[in-house]
Image (cartoon, rainbow, N blue to C red; front, side, top):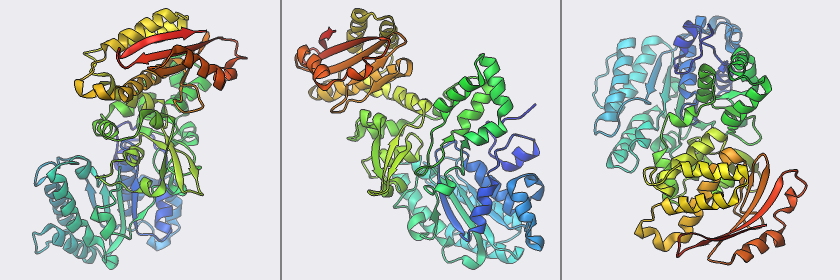
Length: 522
């Protein structure tokens, strides 16, 4: 049986137990041979950062047997007497633990130092954490006769977990004292690697440790985590075949669906896209297309960030710009959620304008897009206990059947079921557009809904197997104005040659009624 590493983050466990492995050791070789010594890598959660750091750990520990058959094996053997040296390693795995208590972070750091001191049989003469870390590095280097490797996995977990609390500031201050000791320790340190989801621009790790090389947006490392299409086909060909057989679809259709759901991540301009490894491996294991990555963590803080910001939902869906400085750094007091959305994996690079040093960002794939849209439902449409999700399904069914009167009956019923708190009444125009946009976007999961909501484009074009609907929405205006807009702007012209029946539909919403007040079909 071929073993899929759906939850394995230890390279040693993976290799010793015969799990399938996508070889990423060429990147370790490149990092070491390039002459650099201290690096930082930002990637979304569940994207293989911990496994990659574990691979670095085993490489520097000189575990030659684990690398047999991999890219780095022959490269390292060519070093002769200097091959597979066993460097001492201090590794901080911060993805676990609770950091919202006064001693949460300090206790985790203390435990790591205790383990290192026991492993390498050294005894520092201080209890101060920062001084102890510095002393440990020097004592371990002297004891082993080789410089120390320092690895820090998910450094930002203690910050993300406590964002907006007093403990967050305490954790930042502890970081400032603790990891800054790495600076000016060149003679005692061989290699340093930090990973995280976000790069906090004002955290001292990046101000005091200004020698950390951020490789997150470099093209040659764009596939350092994640799985490329070529890697997927080379390593998982039997799994693709088994999945296609189980679902009774062709190989090409299976690949197309995998690509649409899990591919599309780009971490530099013009780079090859990569698949989300967590979702891809779980899909192969279950032999079905599920929303694995999104369901593994609720983006509550991201929903709140979007709700509190001035960023509109339609701009997030249709594409939004962000300059390179914003992409690289995140400030907790920044009202713009876009950099955090990118670093967290909910947006990815779609294109790059070198002249203005500006990136165009968008959702990477359907798993992320529709998972995120569904997570917005409670904040935009109200809790599911107050409105019936089946009404959305009815909208789709009626459009697919060409039943427009029933479609508008269901649309009115859906809007009537959405609660309107009094404090939102004066902002109904904004609320109406957000609600309508979310409803139409969710319909797009089933009906190929092209939502633009921008000047010069139709508000919405819905395509079903038998019909094409060109919508124009107006607020507190006449339905004739909506119909004229469709004709004057030529919104329906691109679809005139299509074999499907074409409908032009003007829709008017009323702020007083808080619902559809009129519509016309031609």
